[in-house]
Length: 148
Image 1 (tube, one colour):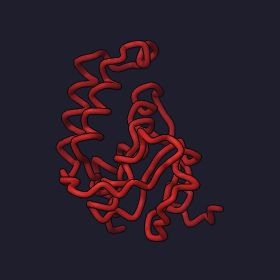
Image 2: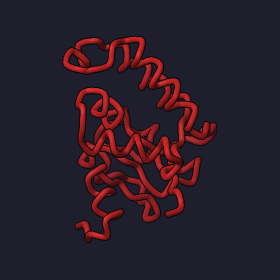
Image 3: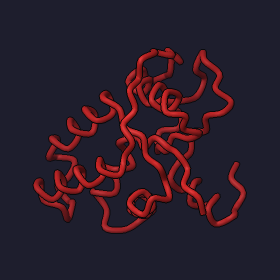
Image 4: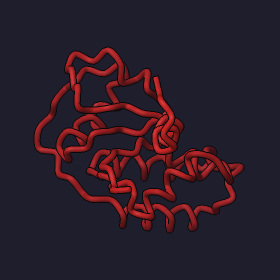
């Protein structure tokens, strides 16, 4: 299967660090195997860094702080860096997610993977070529299942 470009919202990465199993870990595995071509930009990078510094999020994680940093470094090594020069202003419900849509548009990614789909609905900017999928929806699609 060829790789597909995507932007990975931080909640998927954090979820993979919080649980020992599950779809979040499978998504990271696909990224490291090159089946998902990840895009990264300045704003998303700094959001990841900020979350990695919130130790309360990882109280039950099997990764210690150094291991989390090492995994993030490895994660960044499989990302393609994209410079975002234009602000699209989709006026999302959660304005803090605007940079993710801007990154996807700038990098030509057809999808954003997130657990917060509701935050991407009802924007002022209609983007028919950009899908917002949960990791579970992507995995179902890969198995050939229909998603609604």
